[in-house]
Amino acid sequence: MTLDRPLHPRRDRATLITYGQFAMYGWFLYAFGPSVPLLRDEYGVTSTVAALHATLIALASLLIGLGASRMVKHLGRGGSLRSGSILLIIGLLIYTSGHSLAVTMLGAFVAGLGGGVVVVFGNAHLSAHQGEAAPSALSEAAMMSAVFGMIAPLALGLGVAIGWGWRPGLMVAALGILALELLRGPTTAFNDAEIPHDQIPEPVPLPHLFWWAWGVLVCLVGVEFCLVLWSSDLLRLRGGFGPGAAAASLTSVVAGLAVGRGVGSVLARRLNTERLLMGAIALAFVAFGAAWMSNGALPILLALFATGCGVGLHWPLGISRAIRATNHQADRASARVVVGAGLASGGAPFILGALADAFGVHTAFLVVPVLLVIALALVIARPVSTGPIGAIPAIPL
Image (tube, rainbow, N blue to C red; front, top):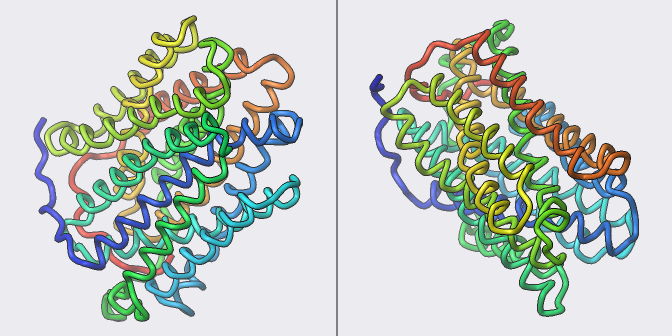
C-alpha cells in the first residue's frame, strides 16, 4: 500500500539549530547509557543503584512533560529551548565532575530536565515551523540524534581505552550545545512561531484509542532504553569484551537505530505504517533472541545491530501513531507521550538492573522480549487508521 506523504522540510537557520540540539541530545543519551555500568564499577555499587541515574533522567522528563504548558507561556518556545540547552550543559558538568553518587545523580536529573525541554519544544518548534513538512522534519531530527548517538559510544569507549576515562566523551555534548547557543545569538525570536489565538482549539479529553497507542509506545521506549543502558553488560558477559570495548561496541545498537530510522522514513512513505510497525517489532524480537542466545563477539554485535534496525522504527512510527489517534491534539499528545517515555525509560532499565542483581544480566534481559510481545499484541488488538499526520498545530499541551 502506498501512502501520500508531506513535502520536504526547509532547512533554514532555525531548523538547523534545532536539528543540532537533537544531535547533541542524542550524543548525551547514547553516551550516558554505557557510562552507567562504568560508573557502577568505579563506585562499586549494584546495578540497581546505578540504574537510579536513568530513573532520575526519566523523572525529570516526566516533570517537563507535565509542566511544559506553563513553561512555554512564560518563556516562549525559543526561550524554553535556550533554557533546555543551559540545563543540559549544567547537568553534564555536574555529572562528569561528581565523585559521589549524590552528585552524579543530581547531574543526571538536571541533564534530564534539559533534555526533556529540548525534546518537547524542539518537536513543537519543528511542527509549527515546518507546517505540512513537519513529519519529515521530525524524522530528520530523529535521524540526526541517532547518527550522533552512534558516534558517542565510540568516543566514550576510546576515552576509557586510552586512560582518559568516560567523562570526556560526555562533555563533547556540552561543548556542542554551547556552540549552538553561540550560533543562535542573543535572540530566540525565530523559534517562536505561533498560530493565531482564535485558531487554537479548546482541549478536549484524549480518546481511548490514544491511551492504547500510548501503552504501545511505553513498552517500546522501555525496550530501547534497556538496550542502551545495559547492552554493554551483555557484551562483557557473553562476548568477552573489556569495559572500554563493551562501551564502544554499543555503537552496534545505535548504528542499527540510525539505519532503522533512515530506512524507515523512506518505507513509511510507501507502506502501511501499522504493518511496518508490526514488522519492526517482529524484527527486534527475532534479532534480540539471536543476540540473547549467542556466544561470541561477532554474532552478538550483528544481532544487536539488527535489533537496533527494528527498534529504530519504533519511536517515529509509535509517536506518529499516537498523534493520529488523538483527533489532531498533537501537542497535548506529545506531552503525554513524553510522560510515558519518562516512565518507561526509567522504569524498564531499573527493573532490568534489579533483576540482574538477583538473577544475572542474561536472565534479566528477558524483560526485552516480554515488552515486545506486549507491544505487538496491543498494536494488533487496537489498530490506528493510517495516513499522513499533516501539519502539527501549536496548541496547548
